[in-house]
Image (cartoon, rainbow, N blue to C red; front, top):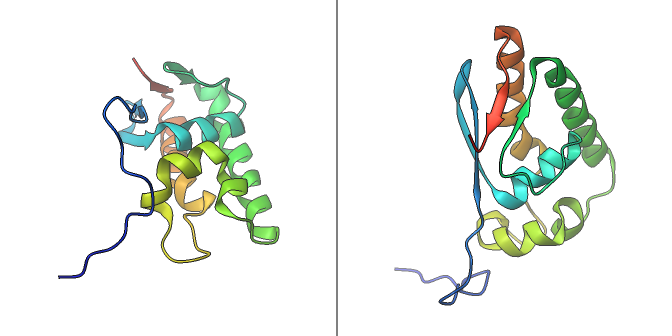
Length: 134
C-alpha cells in the first residue's frame, strides 16, 4: 500500500466545508459544483456572488454560454498561470487536494465549465431556465 502526503491541511473541528451548488433545469440532469468553482463561473456570467439562490433565464442562457466560452478561450490563449491566479485564491485553498494532479498541472476552466455550458445549451433549446438553491 502506498501512502500519499495530503496536499491540503486536514480540516479541524469547527472548520466549515464549502457549500455545494446544485444547478437544476427541467431540461437536464442536475449539475453539482463546490462553492469556489460555482461562484467563479457565476461571476464570469455576470451574476453577483455569493448567491445561494438564483436563476439563469432562457434569455440569459446564450449570453452566459458566450461569456464562459470567452473566458475559456482567454485562459487557453494566455501563458500558463499558477492555479491560484487562474481560479482565484479561494478556489485554490478549498480545492487543492482534489485539483492538483501533478506539479504544475491543474483542472482547467474548460473542464470545470463544460457541464454547466452543456446544461445551459440544453435548457435554452428546451425553453427552460437553470436555477440553483431552490
